[in-house]
Length: 638
Image (cartoon, rainbow, N blue to C red; front, side):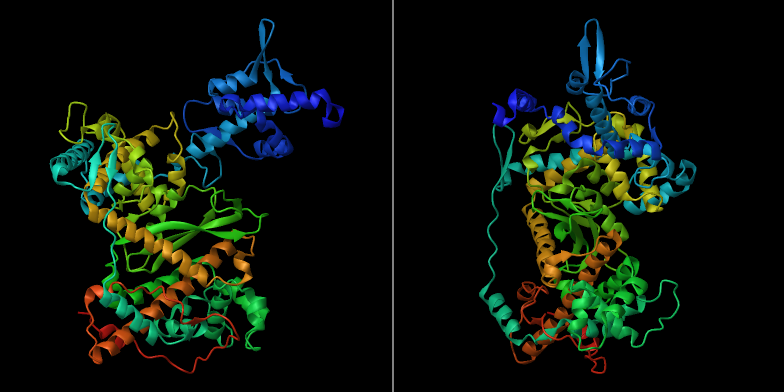
């Protein structure tokens, strides 16, 4: 046994194996915690934690840890209230010594810090002076300021303006939808409810492109002119003047020679992830790496990039061709991973994608253009940003319906979206496992009754109607952001009654959506098409992210966010230019007698890149002007 570590090593391995028995991993945590123990206690001394409810046992336990932080012994004889801990934790932390129980110090520390992390996420504990972990009650608008706003806000969104009428409105919405689905079930050939109450959806027929549509796509591709990225940026800036937003942070006029040229080359260098050094080497001495870096640091920030993107989106929305793809009333949200170096604040290991990185979370309109983006860590619950992207979108395209992936199925997200006047319609992978809730326990349905489980607790919604409206009006007033709030509402807490109220409201809204989802094949096709667009956008935008081996080489979260927005700027500029070229090609084909049908044009997509040159020397010519958009905007598709 000696070569293997002796009897003690064998005993340690045995304890480790036993720890996994019954899915109990708690005894294994100390090994990973001990190297960071000093940092945890420094955190306790630097920050002030307090409870947001009357239940303060975790905060008291933190004080107990601080008082005993100097100890190195295995046991602590003093007693402490461990009611907050699960029976599994209590069994691990407490041990019997004769007639008296003792606390195992190491396991107590791990236990308390684990519950501190959980209660920070749920909002049951707040950090004084923090923004993301502040007491959300202090961030909300006072109710006295909310009262004058309620009637107009509810009228604009079609919501009832009193607690009783609000509950009655919800109850009627749920009951009417369920009754309609139940009556239409015999004629619905796309869904079958088995004996276990599980709905089974049949696959819709596959949509095949017509021969005419395929021929049109081929004819368009043959005529597409070759472009390089810098010329595309130059032309789009000529049409939109998006570089007017770039300039010194002070707001004064830029004192740069050839300022527009510098801004366009900087956008290209950072949006393609080449970086200033590599980009300057291919620009024939037009600009130096230092000059590109200076413009990025001193003349461009995330807000300026958002404003530039808004200009492109607004001008894009004037063109006629995008209106054939969508009217801008819907958008889809999804995230994709970008590689990062391991040692920075945002980088986390992503299990599904593998490797370290961050998530670029995009909102893409039904007309293919990207509306807004966030750059978040891989461990972030993506659902908290579904709504925020729409609230921060300042363009003329203002969707009222948002499609998302499985991340969007959370009941608090459904509830908050409903109160903000947003229709949340996600694509849910495991939707059959979700519960359908009855309007009341007395209601029985003839065909779909097996779908439903428990009834809605209408009293809980009615009691907390004021809290729900106060939260929504505070978000509208910019007092609290939806991601901060949803982080608190995205973690179950038996203490947080606001969470429970949002959850109950979300159950109503989600049940209505699920009923519509199983009964309407067109809705399912719309959701699939919208989410396919945002996934296609991910591949399209990454095609331009060809520098630096696809790794974002900055450790600053602000610079990382800017890189994603630079990339969106290039992607949207290419989409814009592709639409202009497509319009010109279709106009020429029509003049030549080519029969162009509206449904064939909808099969086209602006996500085309085979005609774009990415490599070689990069030069810019501001003297050669492109065509004006008057003729493009005037062309009407039949």
